[in-house]
Image (cartoon, rainbow, N blue to C red; front, side, top):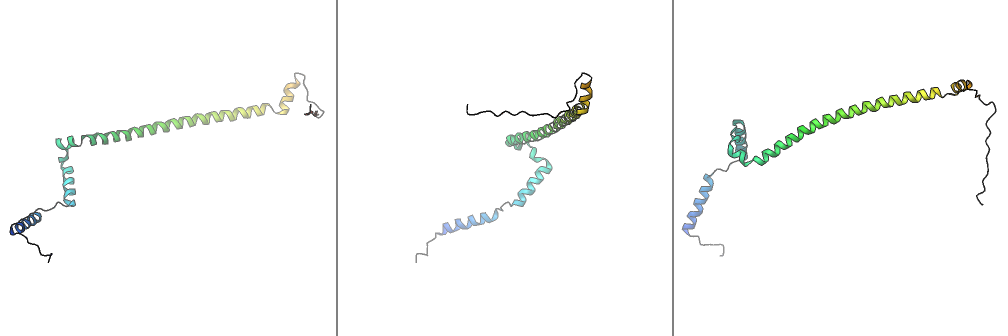
Length: 140
């Protein structure tokens, strides 16, 4: 018996009016909002003063990010040029090193040294080299 409630006629009328008002107001759907936004962008209506002032901080942030992207591109190109220039210097120095090493090896070969030092009076020893080894006492 507790399921039965007394509802006043006035309250019933108020509830019916609220339900009718809810039915009359169409809820804006997502597609309507998207098409409205798209049409505002295409028409240029989003550039009105109120919109710009409300979103000024966001617009500056986006502009800052764009400047960073452009700066990063230029910085990357400059670094690439510097790396290429340094690599070419390293290659040049490596070639000079190899050339100097080959020249030194050529000049210090045994038969060339014998010819050059023969004019001074030094000759090559014909006896084998003897090694003298001394045993040291570590118990001193």
